[in-house]
Image (tube, rainbow, N blue to C red; front, top):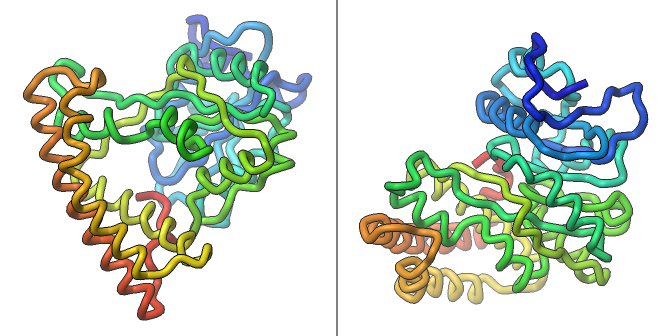
Length: 325
């Protein structure tokens, strides 16, 4: 049956969704979710418009303890499978989705994103060509008005979700736009818990097995920019706390972490030319607004890293336990 809102609507080239009692789907799309029902509904709309030929795919949404009910979304999308994961964190939610998936090709996208109509087709095509069974798509910022980018949009367009750079330099890609085979998951998985950067952890484990990710630039998904500096700060607090946990587990010292924090604080000036010259930002005003965000967020990130080091030195939690920031 078509992935379409209930009641049925006229066909609009939407991608088919495999019925639970039908044959195996050609792909399983897995979506972890927490407290963003409106954005989830928008994502499912974009999945309904996938131009994937040659077979049906299934969509599995794994809710991770939302306080906002999903009844309305579930009623609107009867062709989607909804599961509940009691273990906090997107990693465990993705693991549950994999366990329930019926396909050998697995696609992951986050609930607050929007898939380009060719996203699934391009990602699966690259996955079929990849010997590693490991592919990352491109994530672009979903601008409210592309002709007048805000400072936050300009900053994130250049520095956020740069899967091409993560793949080339660090051996991983983000789980918000990820395609893998089940065989790779069985070899390198599962995804880590809430205290880890589960995308980096999984990707680098796979890379150490000789199965690094490849970049699929045509598998495009869009992520909204953060609404405010405080939202962006909350995200970086979580990511840096997870990075600090990994740093300490690997035998790193707090002194080294504090030095890294100082370098982050100074990096805004060093990275200013990258923002000012980036083809992903248009217009002098947008570039200057983005520069202001760059300098502010790097200063705040460094200060937060120093504070987290102080918490760790005193045996307190660093903040890595949050995942919906």
